[in-house]
Length: 125
Image (cartoon, rainbow, N blue to C red):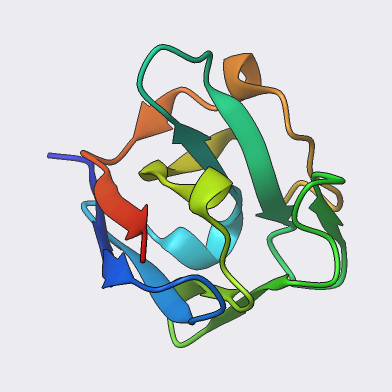
């Protein structure tokens, strides 16, 4: 069974940091570009960041540039989130791209057929 699992969510105060992790079972995560997406209550799903299968290409939403960093290592993908703001509050999902060995990545959710169950991130004072 193919499965993605996110971890690392939680509650932090504004200005704090969290690191999300994405791991996989049933397939080799290293072969695929991975995206992080988020959805806040009452809002549409938003692409946050993505990374190519090799790690050589990354992309970020304008709202998180300079604060979030995506990386991959040892069959996991990480999203380091610094300087968190209340507007970063959402359920965060990692997703696997539809193509193996994709040298770039996109922040378009429809390109990612496999999704994790999500992890809640709450930023509040």
